Structures are given as C-alpha cells and as structure tokens.
Length: 250
Image (cartoon, rainbow, N blue to C red; front, side, top):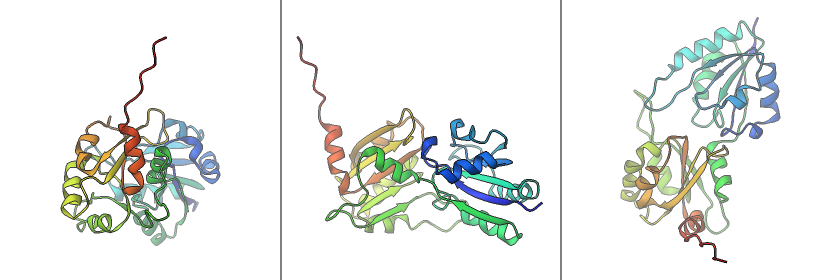
C-alpha cells in the first residue's frame, strides 16, 4: 500500500476551530501522529486511528525529527490515510518542510491541510487586529528559538522592522527578548500582550509594556503562550490597567 500523508493543522486547541477537511481526515485516518499540545477533544475525532504521540516541548523529552520522518513513511505503507497532526498551522514553525522533503523523496504523496495559527487565535482572543489602517501595515511572525546545529535566528531584524510582532515559543526567554528588542531600538513602553492557551478553557490574556515583559511572562501558568507587541495593542494595555469598580453597597 502507498497511502497519503496529510499534514493537518490542529489549530490553537479548540476543536471547533478545526477546518471541515481536518475533521473529515481525522475520521478517516488509520493512524495519527500528533504533537504534544493537541488536546484529547481533537484526538477523539479519530476514533478508529492508532494514536502516536511525537510531540516536542522545550525543556522536556522530545521525539527526534528523523524518527518522525521514518515513522510517517512506514505508516504510509500500512495505511491509506496517515494524519500528521500539528498544533496551529503546519507551515509555520512546524518543521513541515523537513517532513515534506523526506516523504516526497521516497515517492510518498503528501497534502497539507492548513490550521489556525497561534498568533491569529491570540489576536482574536485579545480582540485586537494585528493590522490597522494608519497604525500597522506589516506583521512579523518570529521565534528566537533555534535547533541544535542550526544557523542563528534573524528574528531580531524582523521584529525591529515590523509594526506588529508575534513571537512564538518565546515566553521562557522573556528577559532576553526584552533586552534584545530594547537594545535594537524598540521603545520600552511599546505595548505587549501575552495570550496563554488561546481559544481554550482557562486561557489568560496579560497586557503591559515591553519593559514589563519578563514580569508579565512570570505570571503565566506553563501553558503555550504567544507574545504580541505593537502600537495596535495600546488600548488593550490601557483596558487591563483600569481599576475594577467595586459594586456599590445597597
């Protein structure tokens, strides 16, 4: 058998944000190789599939990419529908190109099913558009994280030039990120929003300034978090800082 491997975006976590195509393929899959952060609610949409966790999380045991590549190729010889389920969108910081290249070189058909990426889910939850006429006309999606043996990241150049910046996998490096951005010329008072577990139950939104980023990140509870910064978030910062009104005594 020569099956098809589908690189499917699981989105930010809420099952009802999956595309119709993603949900259909999960129902048809013989095997699902999934990231660590994919919730059980989404995996339940593949009741007849073998579930293989192949997640990667910073500071924790991770599945080596070459093993994932080989496992996908082997699965395609056993199943007509193989789903590689990735958090967010497969084509953004998901190492999809490595898997595509490996599978295509072995004559295995690959299709990509897009998903809602974390930055868009975080912006939606914060209620702030990443672009705004007269305020923000450019957006950069960056990550300071690099793999072992990889070339240094040029994230700082992109983050310095864009009006709005979405930083992936950066909450754990918040002090270094703040120092780097301020050192590169971004204002310490630049508005910043952190969204943890966007779209999921228990999600949190924290707002402040770039200078306050390390303290803001320290308030997170260990969930997946996206850092958003730019002038478009000014109103969100003001709203978070307004004191709550006490109920009037009757």
